[in-house]
Image (cartoon, rainbow, N blue to C red):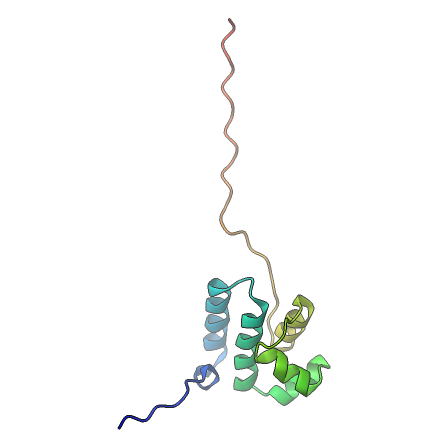
Amino acid sequence: MTTTRSWDAAEHLRDESDIRYYIEAALDEAPDDTAFLAMVLGDVARARNIAELARSTGIARETLYKTLRGEGNPTMATISKLANALGFRLSLAPLQPKPAPRARKPRKAA
């Protein structure tokens, strides 16, 4: 009989490099899903110290746990506050560079 257990990302976030790559991958996967991002930040918080996160953000622990489980619809303000408390900041980046406008050729006179 094979025994399995739930996989917990927090157990694999051993250093800042692991955490940075984990967050980058999550943002690539679902950049506009705040509930997913909250769960990712929850994994990071569990890898560190969730009680300290509650103190530093001023978010009640129960609210923090609920948010970090991806329940509800966390606001960008909450996500930003959590990211900042964990040592990250949210930013915007262009999806792809826009090509420079092409110069129009002059029309020939009729």
